[in-house]
Image (cartoon, rainbow, N blue to C red; front, side):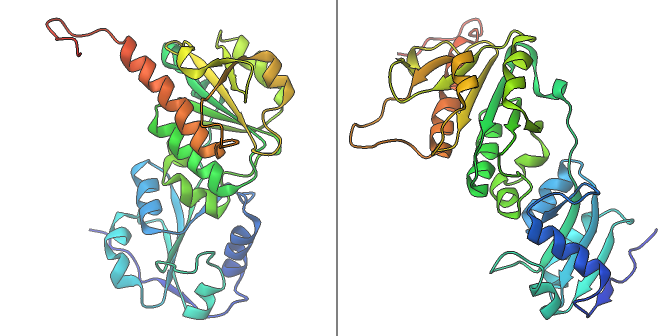
Length: 280
């Protein structure tokens, strides 16, 4: 049976591999070779279970005992490095690191991957700038059975380290298109017969009166700029009723409300098994 070789020890901050890793942590983007930074044991485990290829793993000196189980999950071809404490601390973005980092191959999706027939639920994200919000939105979208996301140009990268942590692994499972021009989206949805809906502050029916049981796309925008006008004019509009003393919801909270309502309506429209007793 083949066994893994001992980790390669790196002691210098100017090592080419360390410089490569530091570029990832500082850029908040994918590298040109398509790798994304993972900074927790849970994220690395989620990536592995989702079939993602882990190219390199970096451990802080002394952390091996804490991550032994994870190391056993890695493919033999995964390169494992041990970094001295000062070198490791120079590349991590978290104050309370678990002592392990990994470079994982980001999933590659095509437009067709976002659409799932009658169950299609696409979330269009336009202009969000906070990486924590975009990560939470992606996680929420998976939780409520979205089939994919479209991120417009100008939206923060979902591969930003903070965003990746906030997705809690959903980034590797939920199909996603990036850097799509706003003008392309109405036509993309119309070709598939998918209606677009947009939340507005006033002047529209409440979300509970809308019909979301079929294929649907919902657009969200930044808290400052809102949804671009090209999407507002192309879609149906609804409001989320909230207390008059509250001006608006955080975009991630509003997204959860919208997607929950879609999920609720779809569950209610599913045929009951024969013999089932209707609730009160």
